[in-house]
Image 1 (cartoon, rainbow, N blue to C red):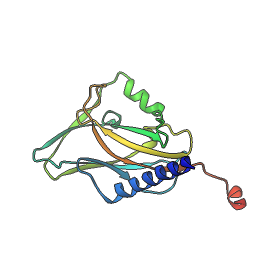
Image 2: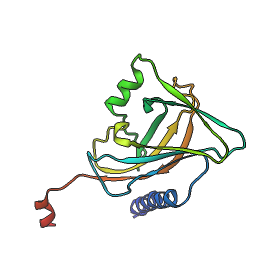
Image 3: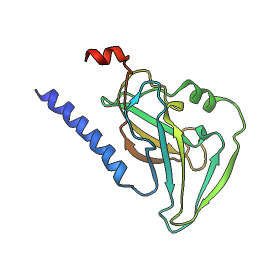
Image 4: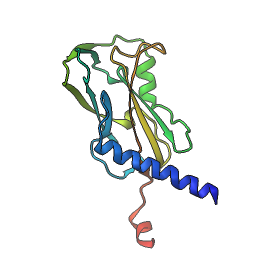
Length: 170
């Protein structure tokens, strides 16, 4: 009986986290669903990434052409098991290549936003409920010593698509 209550509380917390993230914005670095819906395994999951300057001084960012050097995601199941990065992400991040970037200066009150496909960063192999948190590296990712900004947490739902026949039987 205790286990069922615990699972219900975790699901409720994950759902309320999504509602809070959609309605409330914390200062600095936020992510949200660009088109919130039920995601099926293999569907692109488009996220909007927003960086705001909530301070009093200009915020300097180095924005890479290859976003893998600015952005990373930590995706976990509700049982706190991490999901691995996609093969493309791992190959791009670990290859010996020049990283082209441009400097962006955000004045107080300004914001910079863009959209990304989460499935390019994370290799989802099973349907389920996941919690997503992003890391943004304003001076590019250079290794474990790189300084990062951390976002709010989101909980997307993905499920295995069913054939029309199996839907009819349900």
